[in-house]
Image 1 (cartoon, rainbow, N blue to C red):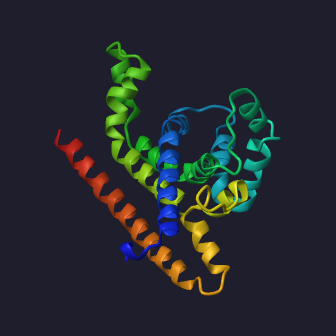
Image 2 (cartoon, rainbow, N blue to C red):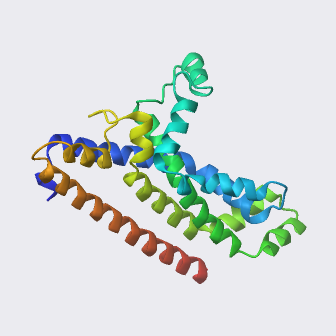
Length: 232
């Protein structure tokens, strides 16, 4: 099946992989931080923060994309600063697609990591503190290794979600072949032209294969790491 993909279809697939990789990589440190704050800290506004984090799961993706456009567009409050001061343009660029994918996948990543954190006894960190370890050091040497299965699972799920992101992406960066046309956008484009069913079917099958592989890899990796940590 893979060899039957046309160069334009492969271009969409490779762009999706690129977008998903950077979306996952850039959002991972923030995902760990936010998950730790939600799992360990008690403060006023915690539920509001939790709601904001999970908002992309509830809002229509088009709404999220529009909010990104008015915020990070060249005329937006953040986008104008990035464009005028640093020469960075996100709207209608593949980097904007990575941002949209990261925002949509972020809740899944945070949830997986938070569940792993909540399964770790906080007394372990407190014990490390009584032995002179600082909170960052205890987090790096004790907590992070224990929640590694959750981090891996969250990262893979976020990657898979980013691969399938469509609504927010097409609203924020449009559907420009070779520049912002990701795998879902290419499928949508094929469905808009007569005789495009063949290309759409090929990409749909490819998407299913990637999604199943991601789910299998997430499960297998999490269990393997958990067994290794348990053995140690």
